[in-house]
Image 1 (tube, rainbow, N blue to C red):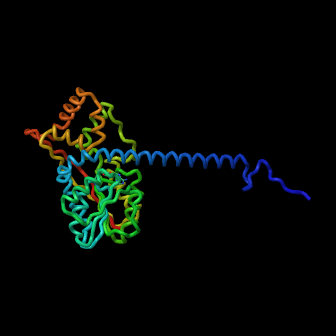
Image 2: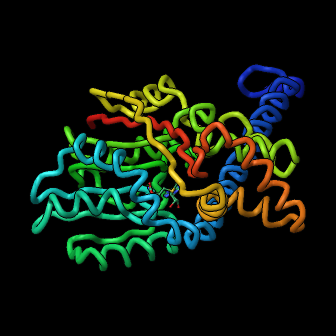
Image 3: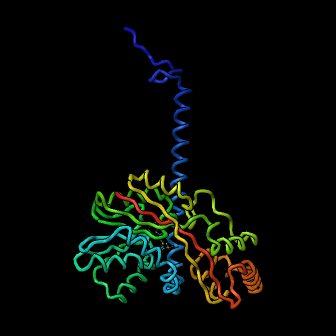
Amino acid sequence: MSTVQPDPGRSEEGGSSADAANVHREQSRVQSEEGRESNAAQAQRDASLTHWEEAASGWLARQAVMRELSAPVSHWMIDAVEPQPGQRVLELAAGLGETGFLAAELVAPVGGVITSDQSEAMLGGARARAAELGLSNVEFQTLNAEWIDLPVASVDAALCRWGYMLMVDPQAALIETRRVLRPGGRLALAVWDSIEGNPWALLPAIELLERKLTESPAPGAPGPFALGSEERLLDLLQAAGFSDVCVQTLDLRHRNASFDEFFQSTLDLSRTFHDAVLARPETEIADIHASLATRLEPYTAPDGSLSIPMRTFVAVATA
Ligand SMILES: C[S@@+](CC[C@H](N)C(=O)[O-])C[C@H]1O[C@@H](n2cnc3c(N)ncnc32)[C@H](O)[C@@H]1O
């Protein structure tokens, strides 16, 4: 009786062992590449959380200014989702919660708002503001919008103002948003247009870049201007399964009584600017201050007040 031994040069599938080794090598390469990518993504999420926990005190200091300048965006978003009495509305990346609180008044008394953010410190500020407004139909949830800890089809409307572009995987977050919306429920969002349309951020960024105090963001990296393309926003919303997508631009003004006020407000609202500038010696901080004031002269009136253009996309889409 003879037994057939496998040819040492052949794998069981019929390829050579050299082929099999190559396949294994390729699989390990892909796996370790994926592992590296997911480690890098997790590191970005951790960094974002730390960033926003630290940024919360500055945002609290500028709460009233932000409320005023961003009011047209919040109102656009609320009009777009038309919250009705009795409905449940989810706000993602809510920060201090201002947009969702407008909805809370409209859905009361039976309906309510879930104000959510990854940052406990931001949500602490939101809780205080809800108490100040006397809102009793708001609950607070700490969550990363890429994994929304809510059941399928459990909310009637979703809001996210200036949040998705900061997320490591905005596509995942939009898919999650659609999952938790009931069929026909609407999402309204805002993301900044490109940095070129936003001199309030462009000029401080140029100041830091020219001094080599920061680096240009890597293409596609999360950041305030990462979704500053109407085409990309439409693609992401459609790929997440949303229909009836409508994107518009809104022009706002960043108004300050003086350049000093603008400078302080930028330190409060941009943690990146804050960390880069305040790490420098006092003489250099004074140089940065003077140089940025010169850059902003085109937006400075004879009385020293500033009115700087801001441009954001707003979008509404149906789940
Ligand atoms: C620019 S602030 C905007 C806050 C608020 N929506 C507003 O318009 O005033 C961005 C907020 O997004 C939150 N955020 C960023 N990435 C997030 C994520 N993946 N999941 C949940 N929140 C996130 C931050 O913690 C921060 O509070």
